[in-house]
Amino acid sequence: MESKDSSNVPYRFTHGEFDITVVSDGFIALPSDIIMPEASAQDKRAILARLGGGRTTAPMYTNIPVIRTGKEIVIVDTGSGSQFQDTAGALEENLKRADIDPASVTKVILTHAHPDHMGGILRDDGSLLFANAEHLVNVDEWSFWQDDALLAEGLRPFAAGARSNFAAIGERLTMVAPGTATINGIEIVSTPGHTGGHISLSLEGGDGLLITGDALTNPVVSFEHPDWRFGFDADHDTAVRTRRMLLDRFARSSTKLLGYHWSYPGIGQVARFGEAYSLV
Ligand SMILES: [Zn+2]
Image 1 (cartoon, rainbow, N blue to C red):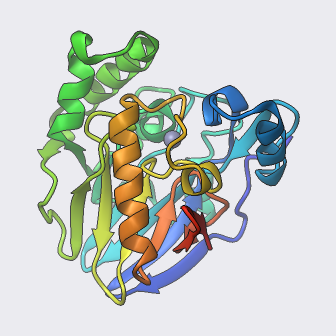
Image 2 (cartoon, rainbow, N blue to C red):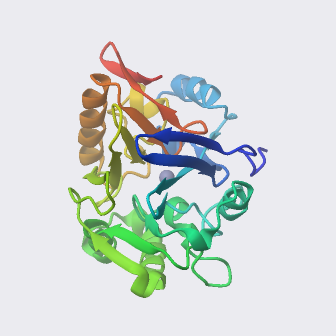
């Protein structure tokens, strides 16, 4: 079993005006029936091995960028806290290791409200981990989780968690809309499908940097088999459309992408590879 401390030396880099540190929340393990339910048994075995997994599951990383720009310290997603798997939830200790005080964070941006991205907003004692931060949530994501009629049967357990986490943010929650730049040089981009209001973040500078959240969930499957269903995508057709739009656009550019669940620190570029793509 991997240790929670995947990143004893936090990965730090500059992009344009931004000083970015990627902090890990630990690992989550997902079964092949969630990662690639449509794959053949042979493909499942081969891909699990490439992902560093075992016979039925593979570990997925959790790459959380902390972005310093001007007076702002922005964190994108908050990890699992104690709301998902106990191999994750290491964000607070890894922030400490990176000399980042949660109380200094000015903005939390949530790509979506799944427990492995939002479960860490609260400590076990119920206090907000980023107590002084404004928490930015796409208004479409908030609405998505409020409406029972929109939720497939399997998503109901996630909905209860999302609603109680939204409620816990209280007055520190700010609704935002895609296409807006709430922080200088960081634009919110609509990338729905994984959830109803999933967003990515586009950072100015150089050839650009896109923080993809779970729009491209898996470093192998999302690129090489973009049409395959991912078990936690809320709307398969929309998720595929979003994946193909991102892959097609960024295969023709030198824009860097940062993926939440890719190998730490989760930074790469898209290359076209025949009818599919790969992460390089
Ligand atoms: Zn995720």
